[in-house]
Image 1 (cartoon, helix red, strand yellow):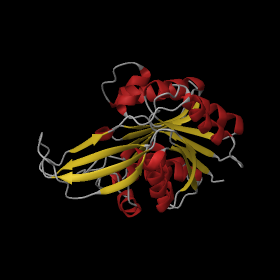
Image 2: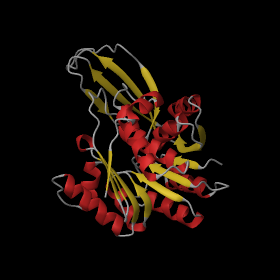
Image 3: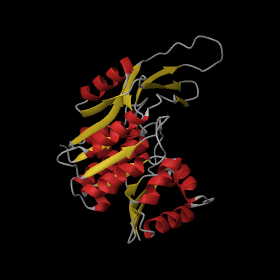
Image 4: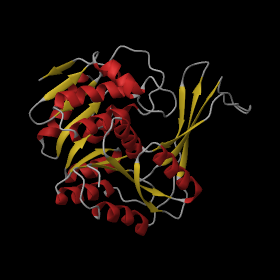
Amino acid sequence: MSDIVTITPNPAVDVSTTVEKIVPVAKLRGTSQRRDPGGGGINVARVITRLGGDVTALYPVGGPTGLLLKQLIESEGVTSRTWTTAEDTREDFFVQERASGQPYRFILPGPTLSESEWQAGLSLLSGLEPFPRFVVGSGSLPRGVPADYYARMAAICRARGAQFILDTSGPALAAAVAGGVDLIKPSLHEMRDLVGGELTDATAWETAARTMAASGKVGMVALTMGHLGALLVTSKRVLRAQPLTMVPINAVGAGDSFLGALVAKLAANEPLEEAFRFAVAAGAAALLRTGTALCDPADITRLLADVQLQTA
């Protein structure tokens, strides 16, 4: 079994295209067509694989879309372990408008999982032998799945001595944090919802992350802040990264690229500063790609020298 396992309860086939301009009623003819495997944990696994890491992706598959998803994932060299759902795996679609340069993201709800179906995912995770050192849970929860689903995964990992890393939002994130996780990667919006208060500047965001790390419920907070940069906070230290000066093409997949690079370097026993620096470069590299292509290792290498860290 791989050192790293990702689990994606609500995966998708991501379809992306470009049109000249989005207008109502008219037929909007795409000038490109691309299909990528999608869903938070799957994207993280794709990035780790590109960086030479050892990773296995766990996810449910249903119907023809599920079969296509598995083919797309394995075509990128990612090892899969799946379970089956009665309803079809979802598709999401992304449209880039050439006239404005604006991306439009359409996220569909996906299947409703029965209790036996979502329990199958937990059984698949708990039955892994040998158990991985790192488990990454990422993405939304499908309909029918309880809000404490990721918290149950964290408990399995804790019992097996593995680190559980989480990137999700809303009640699912809050429930997992209440039970304890090793690392969370919220965005500004997700962090605001989690702490339940208005955070008005970078100092307030950092204070909230420090408080969370000091509570003992979260070992590490990796807070991605868009134009404000990023933070990596533990109970003992804070690493700050300023945003890189660049013209972004597309923000899709930046968070997943950040997390995939961070986990790959942590699993390789790199120093925390280097892992964070690499993650910031990977998140920025994703901004240079179109659609759902995620980061390119060559862009990460090029951008690394521009990442400046401050420590506290």
